[in-house]
Amino acid sequence: MRKEETIDYHIKSCWHSISRIYNQKAQIEGITGSMGFVLININSSEGTAATKIAPMMGLESRSLTRILKAMEQKQLIEKHPDTKDGRSVRIFLTPAGREKKMVAVKTIKEFNEKIRDALTDEEINSFFRLFEKIHSVIEKIEK
Image 1 (tube, rainbow, N blue to C red):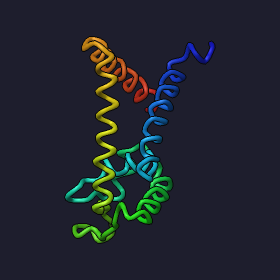
Image 2 (cartoon, helix red, strand yellow):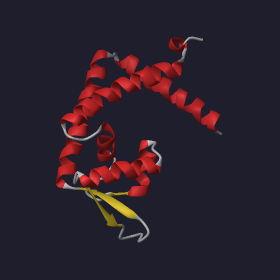
Image 3 (cartoon, one colour):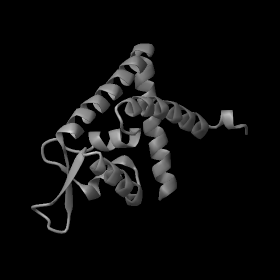
Image 4 (spheres, rainbow, N blue to C red):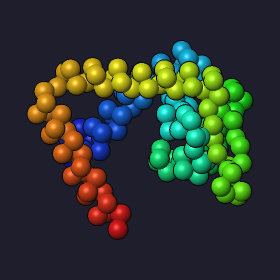
């Protein structure tokens, strides 16, 4: 089987193209695409437990630790002890972090609007049904 005939090739290839678009926009803002994804996963008013962010993004905690450190150095986030759980740390957005989060959200919305404009409602619905099936197969494989 040639790589062009495999499903995972097309998913990965498409994701790399999307990631490149996001990273180019992020670079203009002085951050990385990964930082943008972290920003959109932090609750703007209540902060988010550091331990909750990695699973939301599908990252290993070691990778997230490096990203959070860089974000802290750029003054995009602040870490504070969790008032409900003294063992845990919550991540809060700084004013600069909130601004970058707004840019990240806008970038994602614009990309999705362009894709939706290029597809019919039927194609969009088929896309989501297809990926639900793929996720279902993946869950069965992982068991």
